[in-house]
Amino acid sequence: MAALSCHFHSTNLFNSQYVKSRRSKRFISCSAQPTQSNIKVVINGATKEIGRAAVMAVNKARGMEVAGAVDNSHIGEDIGKVCGLEEPLEIPIINDLTMILGSISQSKASGVVVDFTDPSSVYDNVKQATAFGMKSVVYVPRIKLDTVAALSAFCEKASMGVLVAPTLSIGSILLQQAAITASFHYSNVEIVESRANANDLPSADANQIANNLSNLGQIYNREDPSTDVLARGQVLGDGIRVHSMVLPGLPSSTTVHFSGPGEVYSIRHDITDVQCLMPGLLLAIRKVVRLKNLVYGLEKFI
Image (cartoon, rainbow, N blue to C red; front, side, top):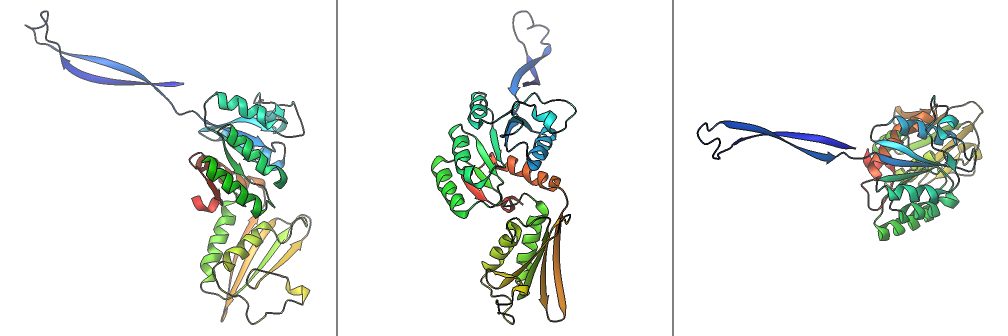
């Protein structure tokens, strides 16, 4: 699509016909200027709960559009109908990422692959996207740091942008930043988290907080160094204790407790719906199109 740009100019036309009247004439010049096309977004893992939420969020967002849906279930069905949209998007779900990437690369538009798959396939998925000149946003829990390091080296060589996000929750990132600030003032800290199921505990959020605080060079909970009492929780990093509570129906919650003489400072973040990840996802898509290397953590842009 092109935008019509019109400019008014004033000029004097001096020729034999108008030399006596010396009238000042105005004319209009028009030029067609191309508008910036939408970012074409491919959702890999589109039929998962987070994938369906991402399809709806991208479909509503300004400046981007759903260009493909990849998954191993509901193959051939319209992704719009699978997501419960009132009208179909006329985008069938397929299980071949390369086929979608090839069609988008021919359009010369900016493209981003959002990866919601699993740790074992992330590296190959990013390589495929890079081969077709497309950026990637990776939100895959339990991705290993070795994989991130390998991806970083690959992206550096290819000069291609990738954003690996341990979390897409803005609230979770703000919690981590607040915990870092508090750690300069308190030397006692424990993390209490709740989850609806027992997958991968301590959670990625708890591990990330512990890593962040440990990187500051402080030893925590010096007065209680014992680790042989299981009820005291698991020790992560430099003495940070984590207690994980698992009960069906509980929202995902993370609380960081700090204490000093005569006071307790607590920071809490609850996740009640996958929709909380969508603002962070849209931010990640808009930022990754300008990257030429790998960035780990959405907090770099907040």
